[in-house]
Image (cartoon, rainbow, N blue to C red):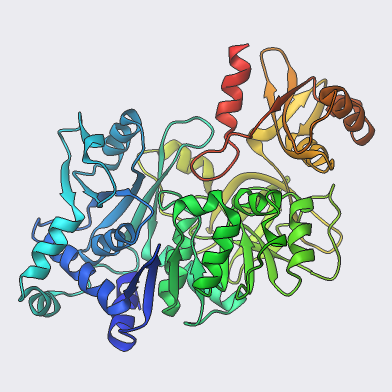
Length: 498
């Protein structure tokens, strides 16, 4: 099969009653999904759009996924955008993507579109209901519907702000995504019995792994309500009620489960594999999972926005606990990927590569290069080393490597040492270039009479003097962005205010 829609059509015909999506307490069979997707695709087709970007204002519901599929079935590609995006960023995405239409679901607000008269709004429910009420639409659509795109057609355009805050669009194809899901399945094995619980917002690239792995094997995708992530005990109960077998979540979501001691009250009963991706998972929190759930398999995944899915993985053994002051390796290459180091920088060769950044030839030339064999090479901007077993160990983003007091320093190494302290919940370091200072933001998990003094004493015992933060700021909570990662832009704003 050469595109994503063919898999949806196949499972709708061969396993029509199988549950495709569980959203909150709503259940959608593959046949029901296909019916709504055909209806939306028919409505879009009537607009005479072909291979065009269509923005989808995403919410945490099944309608968002159905909107994605409907856009693809119409022969176009989608641009997922958070429904709470600022008007300034929304206008920037409209301008750079060239999109002329935006789909709203029942929960997203059309009011956010004010001031963008150049884009036409499409209401998901109205379009789908109108087509379904037309009794002829299904037969007519099946008769005229020829899967309109091949493997090289775009599937979605994802925007990432990166370290600058300016949206940058990365365009991916059906081939990129199908290559990833096939390589992932070849590496780990999956079938239709999987029940995958999504955590990443649908405006975040990591969510595509959940969506398309489930679709590729005809499995079930579960969308837990957003509020459950604030109550980990109830979240685990929800996973158990829906017999979830597989999760791929950012470490901050897993860390919250540990910090609230949820696993002492209720344990996942059907969960078989836990994958984590997107940022560093502190070993002391993973150790709690290893102790409480020793029969579950654990994998650290590594990828990049320029790659569909991930390109490397590391399986964590459950026989012993991890050293809490050593980073968890990112391991070895996923099947049919090549991952290596060039002057310490992680480089990748893969069919999972995106087409590139839209309207940014300079960045494409910098990030994607050609080797001596004429192969396209991604220079990730991440630095790593090899451990004694040949596993890659992530060191730092290029952005997080600093020069301080004449020394080259990785901020992550400082964070790892601080967070390993028993009384520390989380930490993040930034560098004040103006005053040439390392600033550590720290969240404590217990009250200390003189927290900063105790921290400095313990940090000096762990790190070289030139790596000791020049300033420590205690926070009640670490700021997180919409993707669940530490919001370093907010931390930088804090130091700029001083």
